Image (cartoon, rainbow, N blue to C red; front, side, top):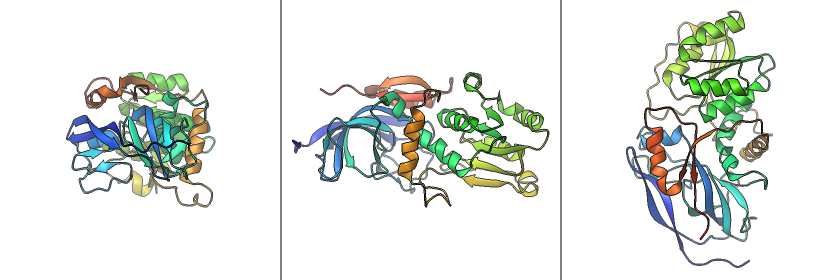
Length: 344
């Protein structure tokens, strides 16, 4: 293999101030033995965590958590984690070769070098196209919730939020749930959910009555909060039944989340759990790893019945527009895809 030894240049997307994103030039070093250099093909904007960072809603002292990110949450910061690309150069010990398609937990950047860590960089199945593979991390979040709170046959499941993560979580629950209810204030998202098979798709003000009627008054077995909005978590507590589980997969960042716990939480002996994708839940570690979970996400994405919705596509040079769109007050976006120019 002929190795490139020269330093290249690339452009990365940085949040340089509150509600301000820009593309900055960066030097891209040749890979060491345990690294690869990747040219991006597509990346997905996370409308949850990334928008909290964009708006300055994560405490400045919080740790970035990913070695591929840079800066601090106090700005400037380069932070994202779902890029599909092609290896252009690979260190001898990585097991990768030029031309390999990969999914990288790396910020939005057209060319970058990173360590070939098994939970940061994944080889992709040859038949999984980039525009589908970019959903891998968000599907990993949904799958993690399903592992943390398995849906039993016959369960009544309520999923709050029908953005990408909420939609994927609900679609996985659909496979075994007896009754699936999704909640979203946007009529278009509710229609999408009905199209792929949700039993009920309701506005927030209607969920209590629908759950009451669907369960004969016993309440939901599982509620999943996937909105990042405190009122949704409060509603989940109200509609969850006796000894039911409320799973929180949203990341609230520095938001204050006021809750009224009496009487439902106390008298119904409910469980409220964190389903956080950065670790494997208790009891699963002997058999499950983050690598196994992601590999299964790839298999799920190979199933064409799983809906992955892209509402907007931007070329990388217009990436800052994607954040302004998501920060606006119009119709909420679904998947926001960034595409990258072909290799020169």
